[in-house]
Image (cartoon, rainbow, N blue to C red):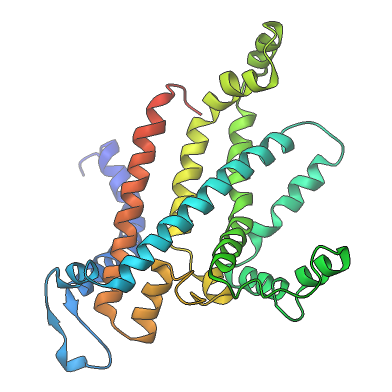
Length: 295
């Protein structure tokens, strides 16, 4: 029996896992792309036929898609920017030594452990126009003199939905940045202190360069989460009022499950994937090459 080389042994040992991944991941992804090339609607099963890229081309002439694309871009920009800023501040605070830091770190994980549907239900209860906790608190404090319908205005619904999404995904970003902060050698801060560098200078010259790679990961993952955000938005506003929060993911689910247009719905999903991929490559080109160290 011929002796197995290291490469053949590795392929043999990893073969079952590769087969499982191909069956559970690669095949569904490939099949969804194949479906996107067809006119396939469950309401008209006999009309299914191959149409090539017509589903994709029709999107660029669809006013609903173009409106959702603008809404999604603004939503992603707001969510990602808020998450990065807040996560950086919280990570810097939680990285310091103070009494109760462990408890505070544990509490900071609670929003991340909450499913998106539960997160949406919680914030919908808080923002409720009649019995909401937010209205009750602001009324007791004298900030407002009567209950407000926070989710009734397009602007209010958009910003509050973005806030709910940030609250749900912020802890994960904090964890990644805390891991990055833990790798920074203390000697660098000591040297900066000896050179009389202030807090801002230490952050710009020591902390920020070492956080570029964790920030890259945060930007990519949070962008992906924001682009495919559905559960919180759907439970909180359902895409309304009007089309104020009608992002691509909501339009995608509505097209595929409500209208049962699987061909066009799959095209929506692939558009989300391609846009996220292009944005991620932009992040890599802009940030990854700025640091030569390894975390």
